[in-house]
Length: 250
Ligand SMILES: Cc1cc2nc3c(=O)[nH]c(=O)nc-3n(C[C@H](O)[C@H](O)[C@H](O)COP(=O)(O)O)c2cc1C
Image (cartoon, rainbow, N blue to C red; front, top):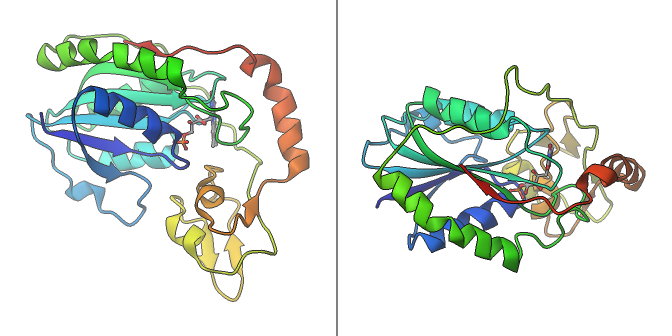
């Protein structure tokens, strides 16, 4: 099997889950990084024999806009797609349905879909440490089913409804601390091109998608969210995120 990992993972949670499944499938995979805003995705032409894992996190119950736009430019040409949505223990709402539709529009043939939980990349107290041992075991128990679906594709349904959940803008934008030494790593790696380098590093709050990539990649830990706003947001989600949510396969 020629497996490709087409993935949008700003802080690594989605990739952790993807790699557990890929390892379980006994595969290594070529990575196509959807975070890369400079890549010409329209030049990626897949083939019918290819098997791709299309992996995205759930943002507000939706596929991150940048990820959807980049997948839409790839030419699927009938390549089989293992859909993977990773969420932070609230809900993934319409994300799997949207990913399936985006994949089909690009010419992929979705054969199976997985929804899995990873630590919340903004409010780390939710799903802390996940994927954990139990997740790993559950995910590995899906491998045989995934193999069967790759060999014998069948129509399948995923949860979600249209119109998709309205994506409310998230007011949590990482601030720059004094320890920043202007190395520019955050600007280079921002998937939305929201950070510019000049005399000062500037964040365009309208472009920022709150993915926390800059927080994750800063070597000096010089980016962080307002503790007050974070506390408010955490309080709002506390009830709905309290119970351990499960992984699922369709
Ligand atoms: C902007 C944003 C919105 C999010 N929205 C949701 C959500 O609606 N439901 C949920 O359960 N988790 C949500 N999360 C948590 C992520 O889906 C989860 O932490 C995921 O593992 C992040 O993937 P990454 O580590 O690959 O970046 C959100 C995270 C971010 C950054």
